[in-house]
Length: 187
Image 1 (tube, rainbow, N blue to C red):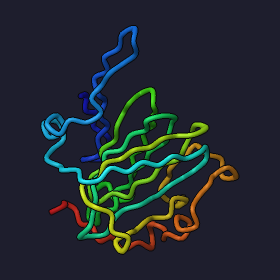
Image 2 (cartoon, rainbow, N blue to C red):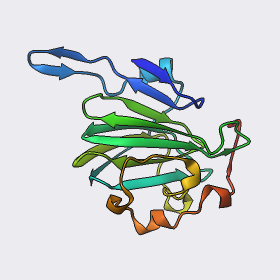
Image 3 (cartoon, helix red, strand yellow):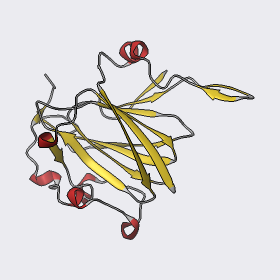
């Protein structure tokens, strides 16, 4: 696995080794041993999958303590712009984001540690998106930052008139009005 560091400590892009021949390709989409060697000791307990059409934007989501979640995300088919925003109070990169295009062709994965809001926008006709979480989902711990918050400076690559959002995601607060339950450094 090739690990690519981003401009924000902890956010990592992972590229698996692809073995191709005349029959197609093979790769390990996840190995706990290799993940621990390259990233750290994270034990994933839940896998999720969504299928969405062009223009769907999901996020920017997180789980409040004590139910915080780290995620390992990937796009199995299609293409998404995946984004993580640092929401750790006291972090030198607070409010900054990393965006990475994940596709069924590039097989990249994005590791999003605890203390980040996460979301994505579908750039292809449809996309199949999968992610691993290191904690179970608790609805009462659900939180979010407004995905359309212009102060974040995210270019979602979706024209505003073609964006498809859930009503819930449009009601999340802006970062300027957010009181973070996360602290930097994480303890």
